[in-house]
Image (cartoon, rainbow, N blue to C red; front, side):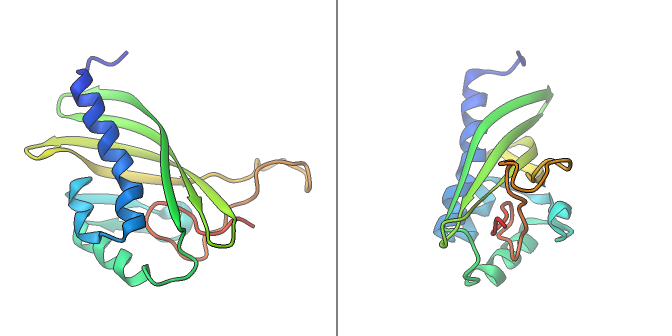
Length: 160
């Protein structure tokens, strides 16, 4: 068990969970409530490169907000803290996206949070797409391959 207070655990969980609400409500000016100004957002797994800074994230979100392929619902769950070092904590969580056509997608978030004067903020997030196991034969019942067709930072938009 990590040496971290219950109050800090709750604050970290709430910071991570806020992502779904801000994304679904399209309140891009609220990204600062969960991300640091110097955020590094790694979307390499989706072919979207790395976004640096909250202003760049806000621009990307605004540019994609009217894309009909954007998920209707972003859900962050299974939050676990995996390391603690001074004013930084590493966390892992799962993300689920529900699309207008009834499909869904899933990701794993690997976050580093930093304690700042206004509270815990995500300063680094790596988003990993969850896909079918490499050796799964077709029609094996394994999880579908997630292919992003456009992306709101953090979640895939299509499952094919």
